[in-house]
Length: 316
Image 1 (tube, helix red, strand yellow):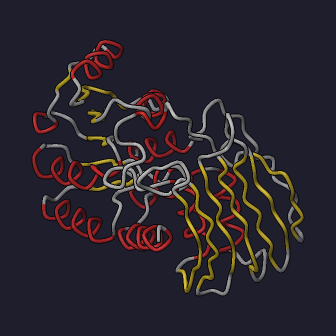
Image 2 (cartoon, rainbow, N blue to C red):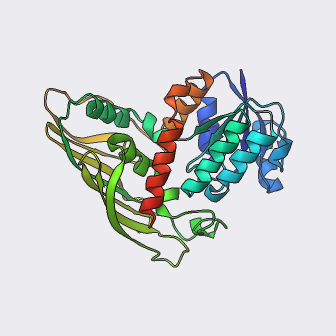
């Protein structure tokens, strides 16, 4: 049985609770939030104690950091240094800058702890399928991709104090589309060049809409379009891949549906799955790999740092 403490009782908490509950062998033993009412409410729901200062966490094997994005470097580093937990899980993004990411790894490694950043979209079975086709050469030369993350985040969402701020949010690429930026990095590797434009169209400190064109060192070219300005509700999450030996289009709430499949010598797989939320099923797999201590299923330090470098580049 691995004991887990959760730091941050905000929007993403419910997804982690579901994922942990889906993995017998994991037990939540403590919750923490600086807002006592929020910590108390989560603790009462779970029947566990709470604290308002993560430095008081003791007796947990794992601490999951679910706080605002801009606070992740400080919280992850302090949890590693000041608690007795062996592992620190960090929700995306690990940091808003490459400099901070290097500092986080330095401090976590010095403390002798294991850092497990959340990249749950890599565990999406459709994403994993495409990755295997690319790496196995079944698609031949990859030519082009189009990735669209066209979502809605209404004014009430941005009334949450840290949303829309440069210090804690980072903008649409960091807070909404980061897993799709990571996906193209996961598929295609290092970027050779990029161009793009972003707009703070609703008066925030960060971009709420971004369009970017990328060329990877492998020669692949493609576009990422991301926005939170769609009217009323999320419109589309979609990824199209054009290759020498096939064309694939994924869509759905979290790329959970194959819309088009024409791959030489490969039948369309039966991998579609239903979702009742936007986060996908990847957190379930993440906590399963944590429970089984399959550390190789988490991205390497070099991979994480490379991805954050790309995020910083695209945030202009």
